[in-house]
Length: 140
Image (tube, rainbow, N blue to C red; front, side):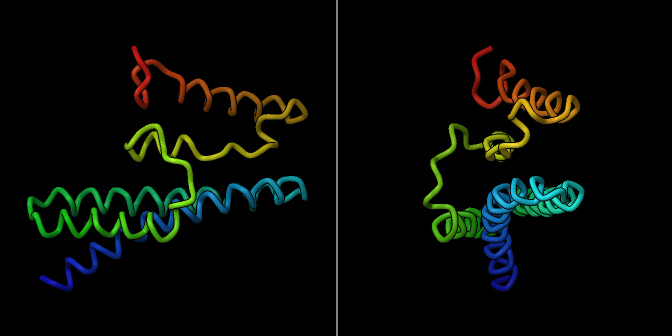
């Protein structure tokens, strides 16, 4: 049982580590896109998102086992990961993982006027979703 709690603690810390990694990849994505490696950039972002979401849902499932020890191991692991890696980051306006993920920085090339029409439309949709009523603490 103690090894399970330790594993869940590490799972929580890994969730925060993935968030940190995704932020660093977001910064690196701009460099890759400017150098013509858009597909590589998309692949890196997609894989890191998949891992982040998978770990997040696994941590949620662990926390929902109705075991107070596992619940606190999950929360303490996420707190440890935050303190270790994400303490310098500005606090999110929301505590939900969905909304925190939406607050990741948008690469410069997706907001400039020099991008293609499809990329500009995708950036507009992303911004519209984040500003939708009832989403991420927005008033309806």
